[in-house]
Length: 318
Image (cartoon, rainbow, N blue to C red; front, side, top):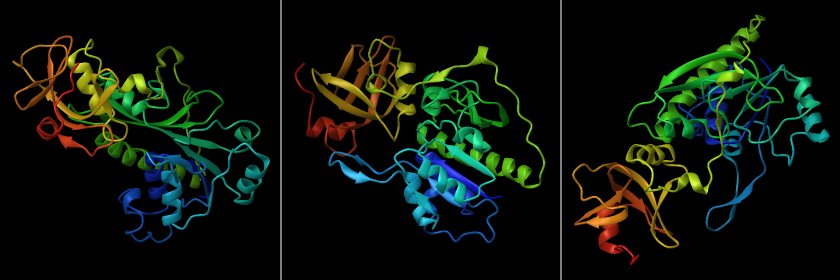
């Protein structure tokens, strides 16, 4: 089936890689040969422009752009997908369906009505519509999440759904582990939907129940902070939800934030509020217990275990 793909993130890059006929995810795209006759290999890939990133503000391509280049796919990075010039590029690809995954920009009329759009969204809609569904599902302590294939509409992830599959959230899951599994689920569902359309069979869509809708707001600075007024369980989930791509942070002293990459409960530890040392252990006292900080990242430094941090840095005077 002739397709055009719109996406930006690492998650979207993994879906694109499967569409192009490569197994094993985006990271292996350069090393794994293309499968013969990839059925739904996109005729065109659209992603966001390169942007400055990192401490050095180096101009950096989105993950989907890197994947498209490695897969030798036709790639464009317009400032706006809604520009007439971009519409002409899409029309020149003569797509039967446009595929969207974590694109990160609104698609407006008249483009929205000109084509069939299928969107890959990593949640069990209508729960966790929006920008950060995987992170929010872990933070909330959900037992399950999943992937939905939906028709893109003008609303925020509110279009009718044709396929879903659930995935359990394990007690040890962080964002990296869970998103990797959901990439495989999403790619399988999308390929199934495209196979159905390729056979000239209709997809059966069902409207979402608006009464059950919840929203996964974009992760902001306040979401990263480990607030000692919250419970230990809440803060442990927050660390997992933001690892390894964003990272949680704990306040050491006024204006000094320590990146926190891994924690575990510390039953029996002396109870205080905030970050403190107990021998060679680095602890965070919470509203109802204590967490041990196992792996941390000082500002401008590499990640390290907490013992090494205490030996080399120590705690600042409050």
